[in-house]
Amino acid sequence: MAKISNEERHQYFEKIKTYRVSVDAILKREQSLIPAIKQDPQGAAFKRLALADEMLNLTSNYIILSGVSQAVLKVKNEDALNDGRKSLYKSVIYLEEIVGNLIDAPFSDYEEKLAAIESVDAARRYLLVRKMGLTLDLLENAYGDNTKWKWSFVELEGRFAAVTKNIMDMRNAVANTDPRSPNYEPTVYHLRMLKKLLMQAADRYREKYELSTTRIDDFKMGITFLLALRRIHIILGEREEAETLKKKIDIWSVKLEADKKKQEDLSAKKA
Image (cartoon, rainbow, N blue to C red; front, side, top):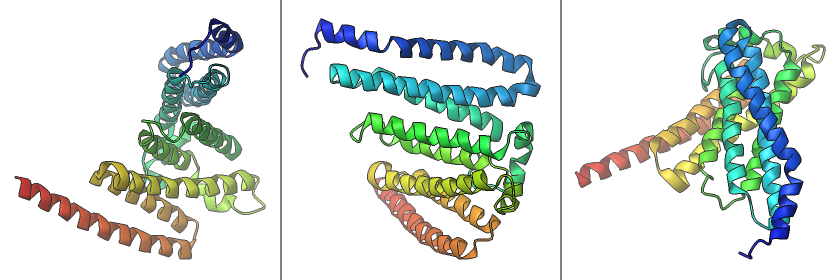
């Protein structure tokens, strides 16, 4: 790697001044809201929604810091990217604190949690998770393919898929897919995105299992996301899609049991 000159370093710090100010301001707002959540439990859900959005803005600033570093210094700012990854995790966690982190579960299991944000319309819910998805894509692209964090993103993608599902009002999802519903457009876009994310999470956990960990828990998690997607198809009355997915789940389950037995036999031989 070529040595960074003092002039290049000076240019870099000049160009990132605005973004550093933004980062500091967001972190200060977060610190002011955290005690407010404890003092006002009634409005905690809305403050957490605001924090989830703020953490996405924070992540975007960190991505820019690394982008400027690459443009000016010809090297990624790994510290900025790692801070961005942590702030994106915090965004997901703030949402989980509102809507829960259940993956394959009936809506009734987490419906009570959603009551706290009942007044938040379908469009705002969709826009928040859409923004989260775009931020996640930008962050993964900023890291690049040859990053040591490649497989850790699988968990983040899965948790993101879960909150994308859980923030949606599934009780009224079918009614809102009627073109006459005022929530028609955001609901259709949200569902389209959700189906893609659940399938992607399942495939990514399977990929992680096959190419990295060989941990049965990763394979099981992949199947759990398939089950969650099938549940969505059933709710929406999409019988053909649900049946097709059931066949995939059955194939994966057979493979899981066979691999599990192989691992158990291997462990027994070593013992």
